[in-house]
Image 1 (tube, rainbow, N blue to C red):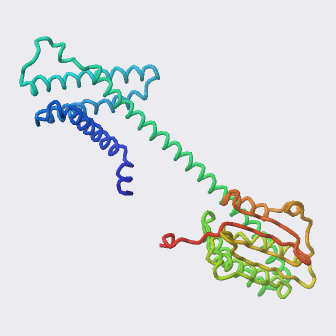
Image 2: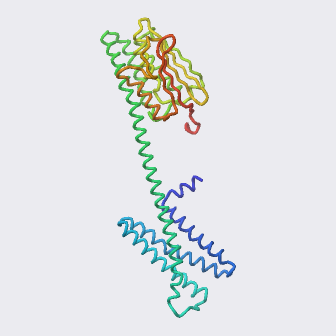
Image 3: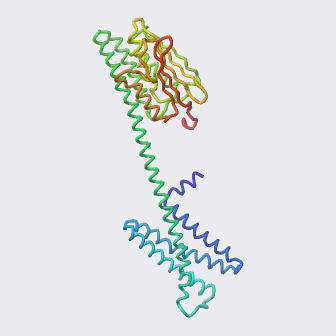
Length: 361
């Protein structure tokens, strides 16, 4: 099936294929309709000869019609009508010639007007050919315009996703480099060196993954562990991370670096505010056809209104909501609520998707 589809993708092949099938089909219909009147092979020969003449005479119409698109609407219509009538006239003469000279073995009428008999009938058939030609051509142009519009929309959508995804990098880099700078000023060079090494590994993962494509949650968790190792250099034992992710969830596809801004937000507004440190819980569960992701902290909490944090200049969480909307339209949930007994909990629901086998091949 795909081979035939590819064969017809070429306009040239499509034209010659449909052009030949159309005239062959007309010959078959005409012969079947007149078979009872004359079943002799000579009649079949005449029918095929007439179709061949129509096949040959209508080929130039294609190029006349293509050239006429450059004209104004009125001039184009007049050109199409004139060319169609001229070809109809020639085809009528050819059919009558075949009839009198071959079928009737030279027994012809004395008046030449008989050679133009059936011109109206020929004009109707050639007119149908012209209508089909323009119908198919306009349909192709419409499909091409739709495809171009879809391509443009897709490219704009991908560009938007890339912008949202890469917007996280300078935001994260600023915080990390600021921490490294602080360590250097405090002459904690070994700690700073360790942070630079972890940062290098994390950025390599970030740059190696296409922002448009989704990644397995297992790979995302590896990247999160790299990020948390960077933060653990800063907070040491003050940062406690608890994981609750089943093996089946690790196969689920998620947008790359989806949870990192949430964890960064929890560290900045919860862990860093607590003298004795705090904990972050990260969990992933499958419920029906959905993947449920939770990130919770036990920090001092925050003001939440209508499922949104009431903080100014926040980039990460707003960014996540826009990315989810771009990827899943309305088939997602992103809520922020108070954790119990204290802290903030972020919940995400997205469709449960796994990588198909042929995607990996």
